[in-house]
Length: 302
Image (tube, rainbow, N blue to C red):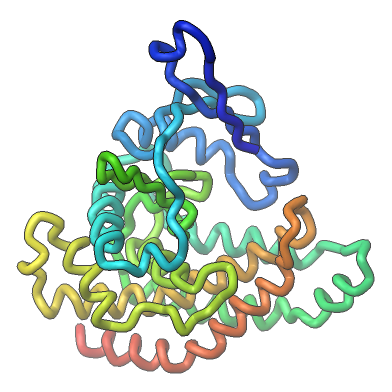
């Protein structure tokens, strides 16, 4: 729950509004709060998101950001893609304390472990849940992880949840903010960007909206060389294209396994089991083509 607190009266121009964020019940099943709180103080001091003002047992107090939350159709627009690319690059250059090991696989295995043992009171949900093959999911994760180990992609401090709702834009200042770092950790550069690409589909999972190569290259140019995007070389662009295409598969596996846990523990009215199938089906649809292109790219580097 996110609350806005403000003072009305003669001092209201001196006391700025702030937000009080209360963590949701059972969110520890999918979010490492210790990891989040460790990182957020450094992110706040570096000017990312709202300024951290204080923490309490199950939440935090932050400054109030003025702006509108972006929608999936917004993040596809060149003017926003450029701002997002520059801000994501700035985030990826930060030095944040903590384990520098990518947390992607640890998190996915944690979701599989929790998700494979849940029981639903709703008989229809339980019936749907029992059609999921965790053995198959583990095999897919192992295969993608093995390819990832060969990729040796750069590891950065990543947001890990770059959906449209985690971007805010202040029209008056022309400033874009990345907010909500609860999934933040060190991770593969391409994985963080791949999440942004996948999220063009929105929660409706309309993957016809996934950016084509030309639109991706526009983003990559501004990410690679924020000051002089035209300096990006073909080799740099092809490398990032191959990296992000590959990690788009890992992104689908992450959010698919996350959705199973959420289906059992979240109080939010959302069809999480349906979301699992949407993400896992898209993973399977793109799997062979992307793995083939990734193999060709990796062989070309030898």
